[in-house]
Amino acid sequence: MFSRSPLPQPSPPAPFYEKVKQAISEKIAAGVWRPHDRIPSEAELVAQFGFSRMTVNRALRELTDEGLLVRLQGVGTFVAEPKGQSALFEIRSIADEIAARNHQHRCEVLVLEETQASAEQAVELNVKEGSRIFHSVMVHFENDVPVQIEDRCVSAERIPEYLNQDYTHTTPHAYLSLVAPLTEGEHIVEAVRATPQECELLRIKEHDPCLLIRRRTWSSSHIVSHARLLFPGNRYRLQGHFMS
Image 1 (cartoon, one colour):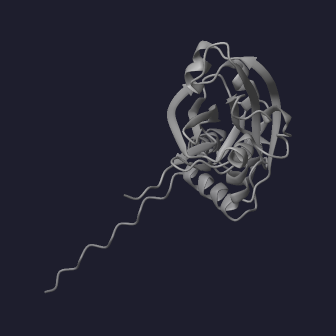
Image 2 (cartoon, rainbow, N blue to C red):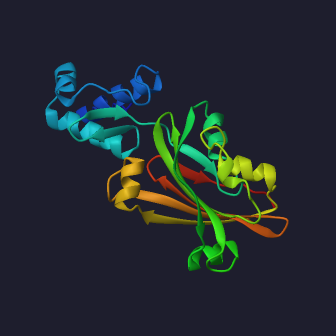
């Protein structure tokens, strides 16, 4: 006699919340819902799928944790902007990075001034404390979403025309690369918590993580600039590639 092999057991059905997640993910992947689009409310999704509000809430919560959605209290749920990607070892203009993703860049200039170097600024620029320097603070936007606060100090002696540029049409990096070509750069990267003012500028919550790059650049063995570049951690990642 021949023994019969046991029939394979059917896989358990996917949980209802996974079905909701899959349906939403497929619409985003297909471009039906695009970045910054508001998706239907929980109540509308409950009516659409016929599942409980708890099931729909879990699906939205998990998609938010995975970075596919952004939920704004009292406003709604939106498709998240795909995270930008910045070269860690290559120094590039934020405007060039955004353009490479076929997105729109704009800049708001908050501070553009001549000042005297504090003790910390003097160390970073290798000048005497109290020396004349230039200071700028700007917010860079990608498709009208703030992605970087740039706080920069520049050697007035090396870059005398820094204050005379229109940084809504160029960037400090682009201008400095033109008048003082980069010969050396230094990056220090750390995770930080933004100040209340920085949270407001970046439109993030008080405890949202941020990435901070402290960048110094040299031209012909002279330090020309020190920049503090602050990114919202949920909108940006850093990637490096190098060859030995």
